[in-house]
Image 1 (tube, rainbow, N blue to C red):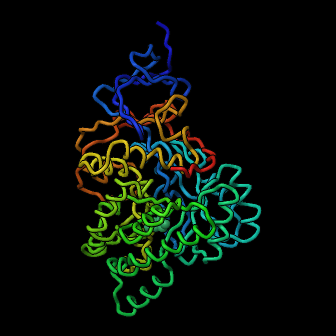
Image 2: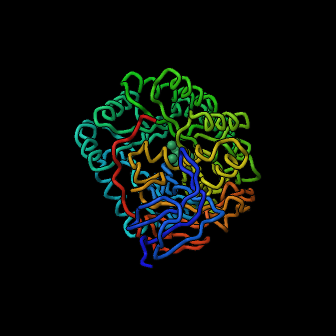
Image 3: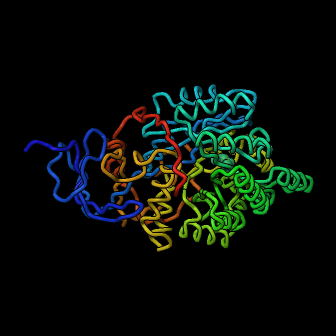
Length: 469
Ligand code: DUC
Ligand code: ZN
Ligand code: ZN
């Protein structure tokens, strides 16, 4: 019998953001060509009976090979970072191309494309980080780049080399409104953090755990409230990234209850870590320094509520890969340096989906459909990649992950594929893991082994963000 499809995935239990059903998936030329019972033969076939078939994840907040200003070096480039993503069931990543103050955005884009050249295993797009929204950038560069497929950008209210003043935030929001782009905002009050940090340093309180004291939830709440208010004044949607707990989340929930289109992202560290993880023996707490910092167990519970009730639309890793035991990583200023000099960020691109699956779906905190929405469909929609990415539908790219939902895995850094020398989740037991992962119909991970070459991943131009979620 001649083959009707390049590949048929047979008999799996398929979940999308809205449905769960048993079907075969017929794949032709990298796309899903048919969904049905007893589909005709494929040139190749994968038996997925007893397995769960999900859309490949879209990790919309990933830092790869991003230059830093403190001498540290990100441990993952577009090769190791995308490989690690794929092994964790993710088939699209959206890292950041960061504008250097005083330089244009075009230069940043060219630099990041050069960094990616020949390396990605899976498909990728770019968010821009806008650090210098001068009239040339806002008036000319950004509108042109939005039309070229860079339709989302992150702005900061903190970090001296990144932060924008309120007037600059308003200019970026107004541009997003005019051009149909989506602004993502890192919301923490910079001056409050600086004041608290100086007081802690004067008192000699510089151990990693004081990072959490320097960046309290109130500072995040204030900046979140301000971001929402500015977006309301401009009358444009905004997405608040890496929300850490109830204080900021309540601002978002209240705004959404008023009918404002405020979107929010959270990350594994805010449901699984607390500030106590910054207070480990010696310098170990530095492994968990990220911003905003993890909070407490009540915050974790609040975040779970927000994941379940739709306050959060997106669950990303904020993968920021720094080696722990290295002078180019967390110890860039030596072991025992003040928390101020520890690079911010933790790795998590590979563990993002298994952790949420196990802790969320496995423990009955969120439905399987909500899991798919948070990890794949909603980020694809919000960042203009849907329905090509983020779902299982006829015509969509065949980006799929076949999960063994019963497989128990003890997370060990040695099992992971990133270039970082630790995972914050060492020793944690999860149930459910993606075994086989396809990108545009090509098997990239098969039964836990790598099956494709770096460089096959394609750059994705993003369309207009769908803010009707
Ligand atoms: N915080 C950020 O804002 N970005 C990277 C990592 C982090 O902790
Ligand atoms: Zn951030
Ligand atoms: Zn980040």
